[in-house]
Length: 318
Image (cartoon, rainbow, N blue to C red; front, side):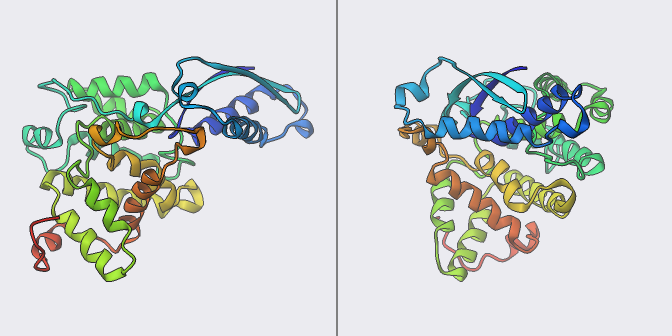
């Protein structure tokens, strides 16, 4: 068996799933008693441990060279080539010059063009996931097929009339991946560059009342299209987490998947970051991004109308 693995800081778990799938397929010829259902997970555990133990210098981490290795377990031989892609590179937002389409276009532009409160792509992907993917193990965590995701991206960008047929026929993980890609390719993260430092400060507050006031005020400070879309996604993710006993996706798992995509420092800020070790990929900032989304996921239902009505006499300055 041979597999190529591109390791970014956001897909370690999905790699384990793919290895598990490969190992299960690779052992079909073995007698049932000799198969090991968790071989993939153990193999990936060995790979990950080996890499994270290495004290790589920044040049090696940023290198474009692939690292080659072989690991054997339970009669299965895995040859893999691997390289690190830092979060700054894997989730870098590139300003778009597009005048049409939805990917890479400001959310305010899309909603105004569609005359909608939430982009069509967000509504349709959420609807499809809730229709037939909410019981899927690892939904939003397991990667969809890249070619399927690109096909859906092109369909939404060109407003293909057959998009609903495509959605109904497409693998549900590809649809989930398309939704994640949409948010990742926004020119500015959904929770905005301007408010990023305030979100980081707010989540660090120790007083519960002060934190509540701050975090709600920050939501009120978002542009309406961003806020309504965020609240729509929030309620969807809560419904997904209600099925955790089946799909294995807890609120924390979902916050880990979406947090760093919805809340990111601006390009100027992230360019100042400097990775020194492979184990530094999950930085303090990333954990805070996860905690911000988790805070809202664990919060009682948040109403757009109530948010706008209840100003709590806050200053306009954040």
